[in-house]
Length: 358
Image (cartoon, rainbow, N blue to C red; front, side, top):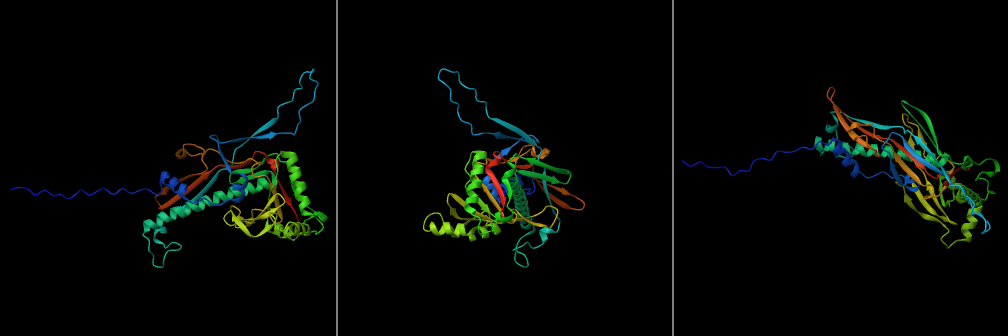
């Protein structure tokens, strides 16, 4: 008797992907929409990575010298090379840790229909993406706050758990952090705001050699600025030209910044964003009230620096961030950790100025 052979295909073994593996987490982060960061994108667009735990940066000490006159029969005069200073800083370490409890995949997620339409596995995958996106947003906001501090003070103060307060001084001229007082404040209608901007831009050019054209105002300062009679008179005189403030501004920075127009050769922005101080529920403004920033976008030579990730799974490489995950068995808890070692550096610190105008 002949045997009947089955022509059925063998079942393929289903391969499950570990969504918490470092490789998968890194790919998820790469595909996430990067949070907007107005000051970082405006003044610190470049990125630099250091394979050591310390970040080294140079600040050049250039002066506007001129070539010397001598007789053609006399030997040339020696002009000394411009100097620079190299500084190093061991950046504070960012470790954003989140917990996944066993009941999370069984709870309806925000936006999901009542009664649920997702499987536990789908909810877990979405929870991973949401968590990573939030961690990345928090890291970007930390860097944005650092950028604000550099532009306002020329310094960064770093402090955290197990990390005593350390101030990194980039050597900006002390006069470039101003507080107007008395009759000089902008709410005084006799103060010519446009003359102020011209004087401040001239001081920046004298110290740094670059032209500062970008003006960023906190909303309170913007209200005073647009109401100033000298500004209004200038706009009336220049009406119909490119030197007007827009009633339909361009929105940037996750709708936190508005380009409101040009006045003279200055481009004017209004920026309003907040953050919650780490370890507290205290809400703060990234630009304090009545703050005005004046600077050169490219002239400041701003760089986002990242030190090495101190983790064997990261290969001790320098990356902007490194995500990882692990499981505790009893109780059954999944942890996710995002690590980074950031520092925001202005290679030409005198290309910016901050003034509190009221």
